[in-house]
Image (cartoon, helix red, strand yellow):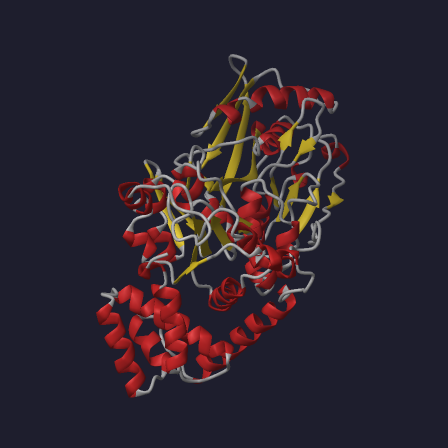
Length: 498
């Protein structure tokens, strides 16, 4: 940073994906034709900061230099977007024109939007900028936004309520989000019957398996899926910060995530590819990234556009999505648990014992083909969900609660962690087979069933993974034939008809 000869450089930051990139705001105040110019691949929102900075300086009691003011945002190859550079530009102008001492901006990163009255407003992605400031070892200064910031290890966070604070040099302390629940989570005790579906959801939660539920309207598919976060283990500090960072960039609420609740996203079936996978201009994380470390629920799966659904295949395998644009590649984390629900046919009553299906065979085939075999093959479990009889709905007997189901999930995950430490295996297909430790006869039984149903290699590996989770729930080191049979029932149930 140098303020000599009417020049100054102030550190700021811009977003690229979910990562903050340091940006140096260089200002030169010199003689010449009066004007205010911003260069360095600045978009329209950054260019508009000239008017906001002028008004904010006057409102805060400063004067706008009447000479030639040139602002350069470096590095020049990085596209600069948004209003977060306002504060840094204004301070650089003040230092370069001698109205504020240079020591005020030394060793600090400034990010914030200015109002016409000179107050500092928060922007999306403050948490990502705070993380970057901690990595660089500088103090981070922004607006006080407790709903968007969290304590970051190694970060020094300060707030600036108004541009007028540069006159006194006094900065306040940032109020960080402590994490709290807006209300109690929905409980499985509210769901009558559907014990088979609850068992499937418990297994899916224990092993983070993908689950597809197929059933007629009113069978409770959405109700079952929406309660899944209540049986998932709480997020640890590292995972909570990862998920909160993504939601901060998207401008979402992070309080429940910091309280340990895993994200649950349920986009409408009209979602575009950019909305679900990520994209747009500027690049924004999609629903699969917003559900990172949590659950992505796709209701009415067959109603989604086929091209949109096929975009899920790579993220499901790699745990991230890479979006390519002319100015480079941007990666978003996307390690989520996929849960989906669908009707078996357009009318929804195929296979229902109480109501006849009115669809033709061609309509049924066309409807079921919308999802596509490659995506279906990536669901570890596929189950039928039947409508609950009226007498069970009217019954006052409480069914299994979320606390009981969560206890089984926690026990399975703890045993799985112990088993992996004792018998280390890689996540490859061969590693999954080794982790099952099956008896020779059970392995031959599974091979014969897989051959009879023409299961793919991926399908066999995912079925064995489900069987391994079932054995973990029973705290068994080896997968038994009963575990294999239950896993095969979840895998082949839909293929055998509804």
